[in-house]
Image 1 (cartoon, rainbow, N blue to C red):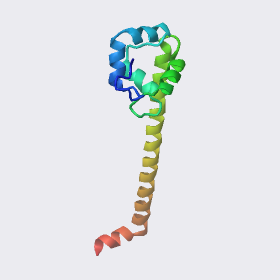
Image 2 (cartoon, one colour):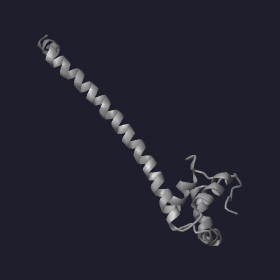
Image 3 (spheres, helix red, strand yellow):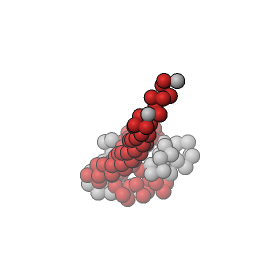
Image 4 (cartoon, helix red, strand yellow):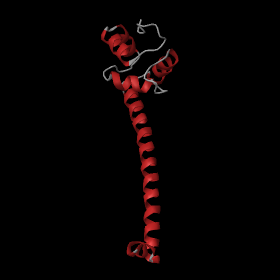
Length: 120
């Protein structure tokens, strides 16, 4: 009923439309899954980040989120934590590369090789 184009995948738009029809919304709410933030719900269920949810993702996502509304919040926090860790790792790598470049420049200044190159 959710997959209008019969693609075997559900898009965010299809999920929003299905939730507005109340049947799916009532079902998920009866399982203790909050449907107030559809985008977050979709993002959490879409584990492969394809922008579409297949049946397996939907079922496993519902099983993961089954319970009080807090479970959606915990899953959202877990996702945000994962993303934040990836960003911090990228920043740490960038800072490390900059530090190495600065050390090379410092060594060149101390050796006088930068001054000689500027004088020529």
